[in-house]
Amino acid sequence: MIQRILIIDDSLPLHQLIRSQVEHEGWQFHCAYDGQAGIEMALELRPSVILLDVDIPDISGFEVCRRLKANVETSSIPVVFLSADLSTGDKVRGLDLGAVDYITKPFKAAELSARLRASIRVKQLLDQKAMIDGLTGLWNRKYLEDHLAAQTSLAVRSGRPTSYIVADVDRMRQINKKHGIPFGDEILRSLSNILLSQCRAEDAVCRLDGARFAIVLSAMNRTGAGRLAERLSSTIQTRLLSRAGKDVGVTCSFGVADSLVTGDVTLLERAELAMIRAKQNGGACVVIARPPRKEKSAA
Image 1 (tube, rainbow, N blue to C red):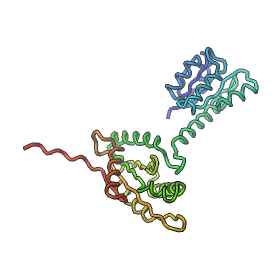
Image 2: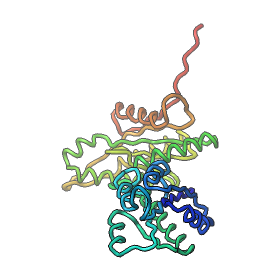
Image 3: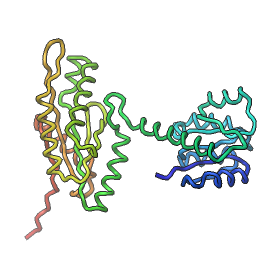
Image 4: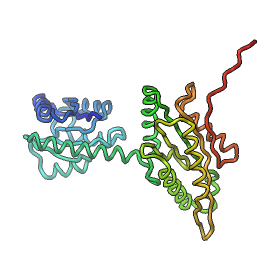
């Protein structure tokens, strides 16, 4: 993945110097020469790191940083301040505004590269954290949507199918009402472990929302995915959790679809519809989305 570095500084020679000193890293550089242009470019580019001069025209670097951190679209982008001379008070102010580092001019190429690499690692960790479900530790819906789009595109190019399984806990509302939400959360974490234990390392196991889970399976058609769903359903039904000395059984409804079926309905929607049919059949079962029937031509 190409890392984009946005430099916000009114000095053209500084832009050229930074490029020349770290061009060996293979990063992509973008330049803004005033604060407002820098904010607009940050919104458009979503760079990996922003190098921001404290003294720039029209808006101070501190104010640019404040605005970037106040905007949910740019708040996670690491900001590294550039300055020839900063007091301790200014450094504290910048860090309080959300900057992750300072680089003092003039700087050495090795130091600049090291600080930028560290900031890029911070961004990567933040991005990863934003895609993890806090309750279960699984990938969340944001990751699922990005990953499913990539896998579907790969399936088209390679001719190898991608399958999608969606699972929903049966009667979860009644379980929460009877045993309490903390016990319901325990159920969701237990199910997460079951899903992970039965899936391959390359499969993406996600929590969609509430009591719904999803699995993206690369290089697998709906028949193979259906067998996995059946195995998951059976494993879940035999796994009992205890509450107040009593065993509580849990079941799930599964919907399965693959990328071999094309049409107006998306892969995700087909699996969701199949899961709803499983619910309508009483739950605790697997429904595989089939190709739509072709209309018979009139005689």
